[in-house]
Each structure stands twice: as C-alpha cells, then as structure tokens.
Length: 412
Image 1 (tube, rainbow, N blue to C red):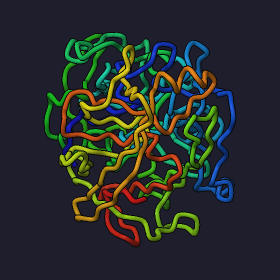
Image 2: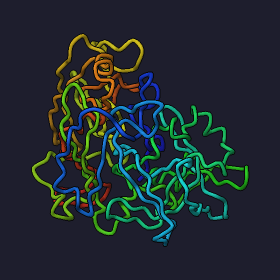
Image 3: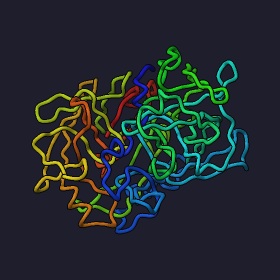
Image 4: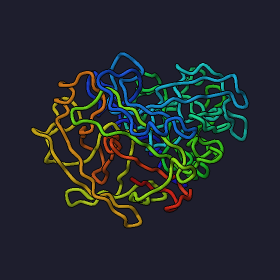
C-alpha cells in the first residue's frame, strides 16, 4: 500500500526531542519508581498471544522517559532455537510499522538482506526530530508465544555501515544510540504491513531504502518481502491486528503502569470484538478525522508512540521551556473522532500544567493529562499514549478481516 515514507515511526514519543523536557526523554524503558497503577489485563497475561507492556522510567539512568510504552522481544538467527537474544525496553508504537533494534544492544550477528544485484539493503528511517540509519537484516522474532520467521528488521547504528548518504543525514541529527533514541528499539505495530509499501517497490528515489556496496550507497527500490515489516502480520494465526489494554492512571500520574498487548482480533477467546466503536482509516495513510473546536482535522491518528496528546489550540498557554501546554488550571475538553465509515465517538480528555506535573511528582513517568501543541501542520490531532490509559484499543491491519470489519481500522 502506497504511503508517505515519513509516516514510518514519525510520531514516536511526542514527535521527538523538540517535545522533550530537559531531564526527561521521549522514549525508552527501565525501572520506574513510584506507585504502580496495576494492570487490568492480569487475567490474560499468561496466554501465549499476550505480551506484557509497561510504562516506566527508561533504559538509561541519564534521563527518565515519560509516557513511553515498552515490551520485550526475542530475536534469533533465522532457523536457530539457541542462537537468540532477549531484549527488553522495546518501545511499542501503533503509529509505525516494523521492528528496529539499536546496534549497541544487539549481540547477535544477523544476515543482511541483499538487493537483486547483491548489494546490502539499508534504510534511512526519517523522523520529525532526526533520522536512524542501518541495514535491514533477517531475524526470527518472538513476542510472548508468537513467532515471525525470517522477518526483515532494521538494525540502527550498525558500525559496519558508517557511510550515510547526504540525503539521509541531512534530515536532522542521528538517533543511533540508546540515549539518543530513548529505547533499545521500537516495535511498530500499526495498521500497515510494511513500513513503506508499493511506493518503495516502484520508486527508486523513495527516501527510505538504499543499496550499498562498501562505502558507496545509492537510492534503491525494495520489494515488499525485503521491507521492514510489522512482525505481527507474519504470525501463523493471530496476525490481523493488536489490542493494547492499559489501566486508568490517576490525574497526578504514576511511576509504573503495567498492561497487556494482545495479538490477533477475533482469533481466540481473549481477543474477541465487542461493542466498541469501529472507526475505519484511510487505506493509504492510516488517518482518521478529529473534530475539535469546530475544526475538522483529517490527518489525525491514534499512537502509543506519542508521549502526549498533540493538537493546536492558541487559547491554551504553552510552557515557557518545553513544548507542552501549561494552563493555569486543568482543562476538561472534548473532541470527536470520525472514521471513513462515518462512525464517530466523542472523547473527553484533560490537559494539565506540564511544569506542575513534573515538579510535583519527580518519580512519576505516566501522566494522563500531558498535552502539547502539534508541530507543523494544523490539520492533525495526535491521540498519544494518554488516550490509551483506561482503554482497550484495537488496531486492525490493512486488508485483514475480523468479525466487525476489514482493516485498516481502530476500535475502542
């Protein structure tokens, strides 16, 4: 499916460093402190199609991460059951597509994907706040009891591929270390199977993929089978989508929040559809529409990889030092989400003073009232991780069927 290559993990973690607070990081995982919010999914935590997820303080002690959801992934050399590595604090991102691992934490040697003429296939993943460069490799991926064989995975910051084309490095600072990236990797489980789709199959200068021979790299097409893939789509059975289930979080925040990532929709007894609102998405972009303050915002999306709710509202005071909102008192707002199928749902949410939140709870990392101005376009509304607190949210993959419809859609 053709899509803007920049949609690949663009919206991770509050849209990057520009929205990070000094002393706080936009992504990551690790041991948080403070009060746990508990999990509403404990009854399903032992199922083979359920992986634990957690919001905590991050993988490094240099800075704490805010509103960032993590899980654990096991990688194996293709075909091996012993040459494997389990990596924790992988960010869970419903707004991107594919698994990406930071080279500094990877101990395995995984085979690099090749182009038709035998060159190494590399990818430049461009974000709002920078870029990540690295080879596409093959790995057997395991999430809880689910397995994806020979999945194309990007390794970010591999020192064996240090030559970066100017078209990639010119997009911003490199995010190729755990500290810069804010996590040990990222798991994109959004509504598309591949991170680029047919646009990178047919267009050489696509901005994503490169063929490299030694230090010489040139733009390249990439067949769908070689593109970085949402590994869920490769599972044997539970492959049509993902459900994120998180508990509510108190207004003042929490130090740790535990929940569940359930694979498949209507494939087992623990992932059945119910009476949720089902909102279909644009099949090319994955967008839906948000109506807020009387304006229709057609480039809106749900995204666990954004650490706040991001939208334009000139009437809300911005914080002085960071790109969040700091209203004089907590605001109670509403907006309407509408799918392409004309199904709509009205959502209430609150926006609190970010400076006060961080100052009053220095050990907390989960905040349901964190919000900020959306950078760039004024036709977007980013429903980040705070939207997911206290909800069970379904993400159905493109062209996948469930008992309530065909993806791409979201339901809650």
